[in-house]
Amino acid sequence: MMQLNWLHQTGHASLEMAKLFVRMFALPTYQDARSWPAAQRAIAERCLPVLPGFLFLSSLLSLVIIRIVTVTAQSYGLSEFALEVLVRTLVLELLPLYSAILVALRISLPDRTNHTDIAQAWAGLLASLLFTGLASLLAATLAYLMVYGLSPWGLASYIGAIGKIFTPAMSFIFLLKTLAFSLAVALLPAGLAKANELQAFTRLIALLLLVEVVSLVGNYA
Image (cartoon, rainbow, N blue to C red; front, top):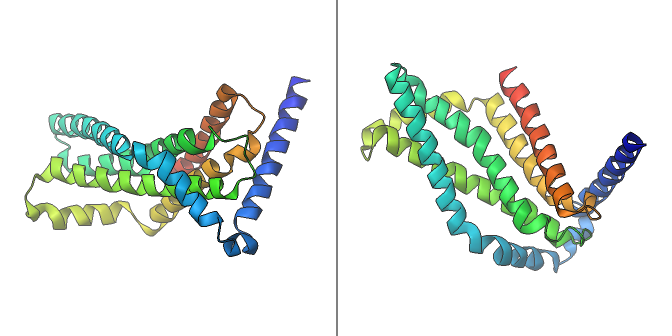
């Protein structure tokens, strides 16, 4: 019975999320002039106030990981691989997941009972993309500063290293994963309107981790 109940809940959640997805990208939504100001207000009211704290924590997390990786690489004589490890760990994996969780906690989960609000869904989608982009750019900048310092002479080498990591296939998978995270955050309220806070958060994490595992398989299989 528990398995049947779980399958029924999963099916219902998937159906509601699919309905919201269709409504988000339907032509009448774009023609509704009220949707975009409402989405902008949701981002401004919920996400922008925590943006400084988010960037600070992202910087702190990035600096700690950068320091650990660079010191460890130096101790084993593998400094030339440190930058690649940093970019793959922070930009490709950790920060997109961290950004999506934060946006879900700020926008999607608190208002999941109002799951028919298209503006709320767009706010979650756009905020997740924005936070991921800012956190990734900040981490990439900090990685350069920690490895090369303020000298501009390492820029060419750094860009070359980044180019080797972000191959067309890797870039495509990264974009797909970031978009999948953002859509999961945006569509989550439709499937979790009747769930309590713990259930909603647990299912959010499970969905995001599923996307992460699929992306890892695509990148490294």
